[in-house]
Length: 157
Image (cartoon, rainbow, N blue to C red; front, side, top):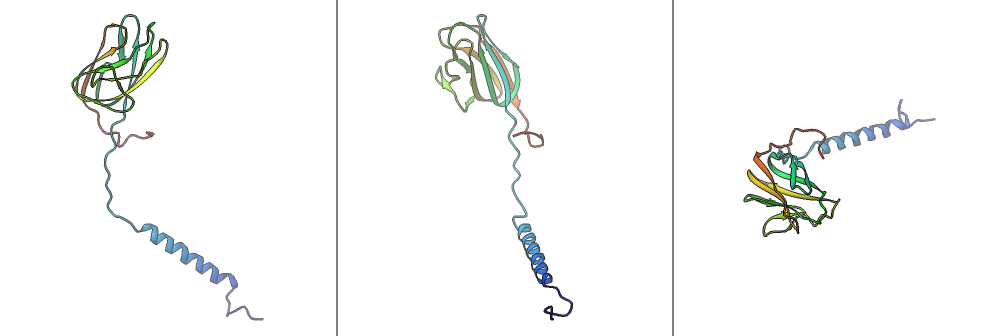
């Protein structure tokens, strides 16, 4: 009986074909652009909490660096209000409604409820106010130079 060649098994040809396919796939996967843009990631948004009560508006922190800021605001007053950011260097983004022309604001926040606002804050001084029917003491926010890139920070989305 012949095995199809001197000392060759039927699997030898299949094995050689499989190796050739793996080598070809590795060569094709290695091809591509050798130079690619590596633009730095934007800074991580700052998280700021706000509170509206019978005494006024407070935010924490009151000093931060420029860039995208996510405000989460709790209304502890007895009246529905809008949390509004006022200043000259505003660049609003996201879900902002305007209580005053050009001023980003949350939707109306019911008593005991929370609201959120995303605002791009440039270097400068801002006021956080409670719009609506309430005349409360505003909070002052001092914004410094823009935050650095988050390029080399791990565990970011």
